[in-house]
Amino acid sequence: MNDYHMHTAFSDGEGKMDAFVARAVALGLGEIGFSDHLVPRVCEDEFGDEGYGIPHQDVAGYARAVRRAAARAGVRVLLGIEVDYVPGAEAELETLLARERFDYVICSVHFSDGFAFDSTALRDDPRWDDVDGVWRTYWDTVARAAAWGRFDVVGHLDLPKKFGRRPSAPMTGAEDAALEAIRDAGLAIELNTSGLRTAAREAYPGPGLLARAAVLGIPLTTGSDAHRADDVGRDLDQAAALARAAGHTTTLRLSDRAPEVLP
Ligand SMILES: [Zn+2]
Ligand SMILES: [Zn+2]
Image (tube, rainbow, N blue to C red):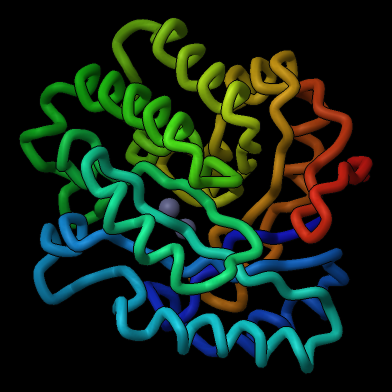
């Protein structure tokens, strides 16, 4: 299995890249990729001094560190990045992304109309009073992000379930519109096991979305969303079982964009 979603101290993770690589080698992972956060200014401003992205002046240093780790690793290491998509920030993101040749770009929606709904600090924020509104705007934003065309993989679909809050009624229409936008743009989605470690107790995305993605022929990548070396590869065996149960037979290997048969 491959782990394409890992955060180091360059953004909001802990620890050095070599420790992540050593853990991947010990687990016998196929290939891995670092995906520290790259965040437009408007998102960082929400958190004042507690920014969670790579400082923009350090993007080149981050890329250099990944390449250095890759050169001495016993496993293939890719230079990825997790980009926050918010409508209106496209020009800034384009400039930031043009600075390096990333092997892949994960698109993540952590904001619903300016609200950082996955922030633990905002877990009881009054904007959560409108759970359905948070979800509806989330799905619309994912569809817009996919249509923008600058991404390879959509990260942790259905992230707003993180604290266990679900829409009051199924939102199949909005979900399908997002999935169709993802398919039309030729993007993959990620099966992210970090959801298993939250109140949602379910990987992102859940089984229903995962099955509809399989029907639409949307490729799947896998990731732990590790923020420390101990979590590298976490629950990827379970991810393989979930993917198979939902009708996927392969995952997408990002180094050459080739399908890999699920174990
Ligand atoms: Zn994320
Ligand atoms: Zn992440």
